[in-house]
Structures are given as C-alpha cells and as structure tokens.
Image 1 (cartoon, rainbow, N blue to C red):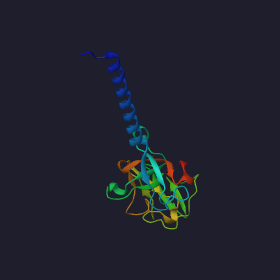
Image 2 (image 1 turned 135 degrees about the horizontal axis):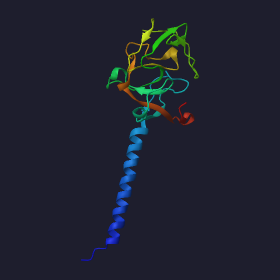
Image 3 (image 1 turned 60 degrees about the vertical axis):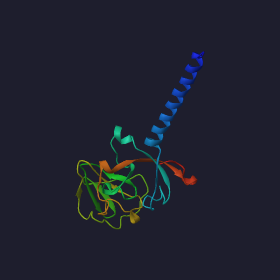
Image 4 (image 1 turned 30 degrees about the vertical axis):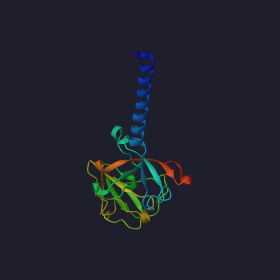
Length: 180
C-alpha cells in the first residue's frame, strides 16, 4: 500500500486551518458577540425595549469600567433575573448625590453629554451615597422610567456582577450600529 505523503500533509494543513478558524470564530462570538435583549425603555432614546445589543465580555479584563459606559449586568448577581442595561454614573470610591434633578459626584455637578430625562424620583438616594471599592452607581438615560441604582432591588452594582459592555445594536435595523 502506497501512502501519498504530500496529500496527507495537505489534508492535515487544511484541517489545522479549519480548526484555527473555528476557534477564532468561537472566541470572537463568546467575548464580543454575546447577544442581550434590552428589556424596557429605561435607556430610551439610545436603546428601546426589544433592541438586541452585542456585549463585549472581555474589555473589562483589560480595562476598568468608565463613567458613561453602557453596561449589562444582573442586579445583585441574581442569576434568575434578566440582564439590565444601564449607564455608569458613579465609580468605585466616589460619593453620589441627587439634588434638584441633577447628579453630583464628590460634590460636583455631573456634566452629561447624552440625552436624559429629569429625575423625578430619587428613590433610595435621598442622601449622599458612598460607593465601596468595587461598586458602581448606574442610571438609565430615561430617568423618569428606569429601575436602576436608585431602587433597592438594583442598588449599587458590584464589579463581579457586570457581564460586559454593550457596544453594538443589531436590531431593529433602523438603530443598527455602534452604541455611543
């Protein structure tokens, strides 16, 4: 029996290449393409109920979450709850206060460059809140209709509960694109 070594080498090289491509595709989807559906209109007008976003799950392994980032998390780490999508307002170690429809970080008024609604209900933030070294304060952009860190059921978001950063809207088609 005669074995064609050149043919075996070519087949082996193809199998290796296909395996590498499959591995890269899996890693890309797992870390950058996890789909999460937006529940409710708390991030309106940026995101609406039913919008499907892609979540970057690896970014916070290399960097820390920043003010203004839109994150996906489960409140209090509750695995039985749906994912929440909110904007980071307060960072670990900062104090957060809400007075007269304005957010104050460490006593200074927060200047926000995105569209929000007025804060009619301060919820549990009727006094200054001090964030622990692993906690973030999050708000929805539609503050009149958002269950966020002002609510006891959500509260401050611990770093370990953050699933990732929402970075791309894939549906519906009219909102398709990068999240800014």
